[in-house]
Structures are given as structure tokens and as C-alpha cells.
Image (cartoon, rainbow, N blue to C red; front, side):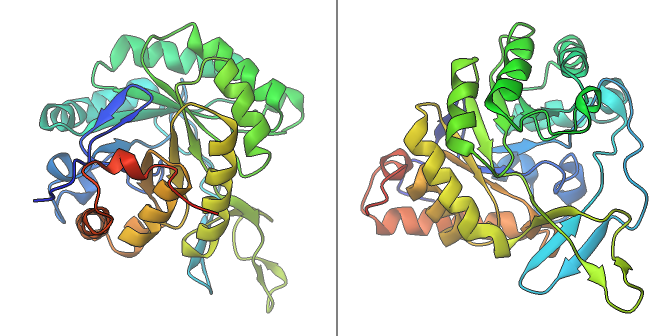
Length: 309
């Protein structure tokens, strides 16, 4: 048992410890129950992104392993829609809440109206949701396919629209660019916390066929290979906003999580590491607790943003 208090407050989502899971890398939690007790271990989970209506996602192949400890994915947010999700997983997710593990539900959409509708459905159907993470990296079909959160104005427009639909905490999942400027816009529009970063766009080519190794030319890169970039962006954003941050990107060890916290993150999400080692979370938590004790503090919150230049 750690002698350091590990509890944190992620924009109103009160977590027993800083460990969260990155959306899309952890299913909806039950898939990992054979490896450890999810509800008794994690501070929170973030469920896979959901829209108001089901999405088919992109054609296969959707995943490719890269050299340098990374993967690429082009899943395309396949999901059963909010209603189907609640009907299938609601009872299990309520059980997580009852054990003290917070449940963050991610909202996806191709237009402001779709984000609003999905949020409204969650409000109606998902009492187990501790809060919502708005994924503003979805392409805005009405505006030619640019990401909804590619500009401060676009990000703030989505945030203001969903803010009016719920009193529960709202996090925003940010793309890996202009994080300080867009973070300030989201804070002004009512965000309670920010999650960063999402995957970094990349390409992988089969040199024998001269075609993409995935079904699309570009896809998102994640894993330890992007960790240093994610830490830098968490630090940049932490200098720009006063609201809490959840650091995401290549966290595979307790020291990786500690870097995120020192850079300014209140919570830390485990992503690709779950796919490499499904039992990694308890180990990462134990390593993080050991590190916090080694720093001579009584509370993990004393270490948030404690990086010294």
C-alpha cells in the first residue's frame, strides 16, 4: 500500500489514482477482466468513441505494427452508437462505478449537430458516465473533411454546443497541433479538462506492392515512439491553461507516467501498451507509486507540473 495519496481530480472526475485508459485501446473494460480487476485497479477508464448512430468504420486492414515501438491504426471509430453501447455494456460499466473506477464516455461526430445528439443520448441513457470526452479529431464532412478541432474557432464551436447539454464534466481529446492556442479556446468555451494527445498522422508503405499497408494512405501513429512528443505537448498546454490535463502518448512504464505528471498532467492514460501487454496497468501503477514515494511527497498532486527547466 502506497504511503502517498494518489487521488486526483480531473476536472470534476475524482479518481482514486491518476491512471486512465486511452479510448479505443481498452475496449469497454470487460475485455481485460481476465488479466486483473479493472474496477479495483484503475482510477478511470475511457470508453471507445461513440456517435449518436452506429458507424461502420474503415475497411480492413486497420492496424500495422511499425519498427520503433509504435503501431498505426485506421479503425475509423467503428462503434454501435450510444443506444447500442448502453444496452450492451451499461450494467458492467455501472459495476465499475460501484467499485470506485470512474467511467468516461467518449463522444464522436461529423458535425456539431452529431456531437450534440450523442451527448443528449448519453445524458438520457448513461447514468454510469462520470463525464464525457469530446473527440474533436473527427472529420467535419460539411466542411470538406477537416478535423472539427483543427482550429481554435472550430474546437470552441463544438465545446460550446455540448456544454449546454450536460452538467457533467467535459474533457476534450485534442489533436497533436497548436495545443496551447486551441487549449485556451477550449478552456474559454467551458471545457473542464483536456486530453492530449491523439495519434500523430503518418504513412506506412509496403515496398513490394507499392501500396499502403493499411486500407487508407494515412493513419494515426501511437506507442512509445511518440512519447517524447506527447510529453512536450502536455507541457506546452499546461503553460497555457489552468484546467487539468490528461496526458496520453506512449505510456508503458511508471516513469513514462511520471514524466507526464511532471510536465503538467493530472491524470495519465495508458493506450497502445494495453495492446502489447494487457496486464500492464497494475505494474505501471505500482511503479508510479514507488516513484512518488521516492520523491518524498505525501500527495501525488504535489508533483503535477513540478518539472524544472
